[in-house]
Image 1 (cartoon, rainbow, N blue to C red):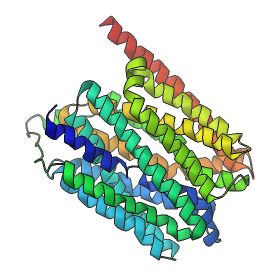
Image 2: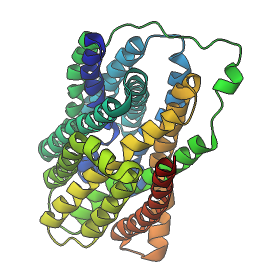
Image 3: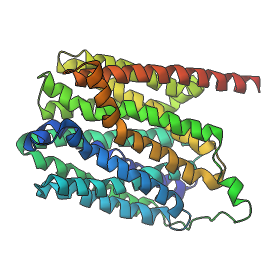
Image 4: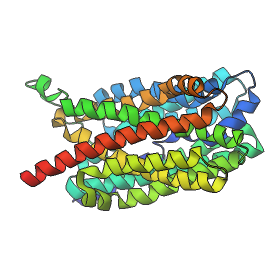
Length: 390
């Protein structure tokens, strides 16, 4: 690996700090809700969801834009949008205005999500690719740990101080400016482009899997603060610490992802889904913050164990010319799931258990994660057998 390529990864990790930025205020949702008593729980959760829905068209545009504009230029714009959309609500009192700024934030996060993974798939190969992708997950967890923990603590002082955590984007801006080079995009020749841009059945399989995986992830993101408040287990700061624990678990697993991938081969994603089941069961049955913290660690391990495999396998399921759009598509699926989650899960939960729907949300998540674990074990075992036979 050249020195230039080696340095790129530091810029990638800088981008990774912001990739989960849409949930930076998740620990503060219950506190924010108290300032807007006329807004429903689902409406408050839209502070997360609106960012996610905006990410969908953003990732599609970025997937195409990468063919014409350098990735560095695109991501620098994305980080600036992250800073503006993230911090502006600290000076606002209108819920509608805050929602608009959350949409601006979503554009920035969408750009970061696509560019970071595209750089990893493009610049690294083999074990090094697994290592960098795993460390990228670790940097995501480190970034969200800082933002969510500080956000919960700041919200205990004043509800809109929580939005200042998005200033972490300044660090990312510096790292990208220093370590990511301006590289002219390599255009795909018009001859044969149609075939090269075609998604395979495997690609669509990962897109569908990502949708259901992020339905479960979003249950945690938008429901934990309400569960802690509803059970009277703690404050916004405690919720922030709980999310920081999930980031800790994800950070550690991200650093060791390469070893997990080598040991389990194609079953690493299934292992992550099992950790997700354990996390949801612990949180649903929690009667103290300790169980929430332990469940959160398992949740972080689950994220860091599942996402690298999804992105790497998606990128490898198509020809080089379609890689950017394939990653954009799976990222769209991820964010569409985050957007629709409250609208699907909350009504189902209320129908199954009226008045206790937040706990039931986690039960639904545990069941869905269990189904995904079975599917991934079956797929991983099949792939491992094929490699042995070859």
